[in-house]
Image (tube, rainbow, N blue to C red; front, side, top):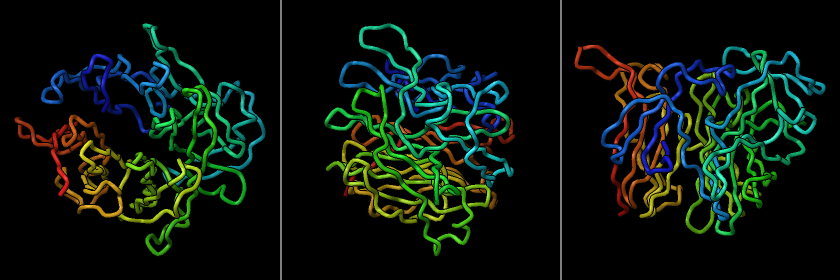
Length: 363
């Protein structure tokens, strides 16, 4: 859920197959709701207008770290690829991922896909920023080679950008699992350098499947007051529900505390620091829910407040569990989520995207 350049709100949702083959493919049906009245009413469209992106110190706007700038995955046939470093079998569907050194890949498979609206220009231009990470691997799957660099991007007080992203498989003893990388840009996003890495270091006592998990994925991150970076990480995979982990950095992402399991489930966590200092966490699967850290530090959280009624024990029977957050004022925000069994006027259950307005105040 993001603003468009004219201030309207857009909530965009996935309508294609859950596959690398769908990356960058234009949807065949409407996949976005637009609101011109701060989320009170919506109309359905097919996404075409770019979101506003992040305003940079030089006046440019940058879109990166999300599916909207992810290019279409390229067929392996015809690509000139370096030697395979190794292969990994994922927990979803037993898919095989062949891994290659990022630095040895052809330019079309390297770097950070993004788009820029330069100051004074009328149109967005796609670009590929340089990515400096000597140990990074990238992989092919399902006969194609996707270029994925997903995560939250933040503007620091010194004008630099920092992003916590996935996927991040690396060479060596940690090859078997996925990790999250923290990258810094000091040239308005034209290049990104590895700042630090959040290695998969699970709490075995909190998850009997810890050693067999895919690793850390879908990081949410936020800059807290005082400069600490806080990240929440997913481990749920094809083996079933796994804990969400929390880690923090006090040196802008160079080093991270050992990840701590703090909730037994959850996918695609979302974080939002409100102007009144309250930190909001949205996650799901099963269902969708909200939690609050009233002092804004992310050390203690309120019990999850459910947004979707659970009808069965199935992880995805009632909702995909993916959410989105957008602040409206210092104490009010919107949360978007899915409900697969919303009763309709016709007496039938319908898959729905819902947007709820929430107001929260610190003690």
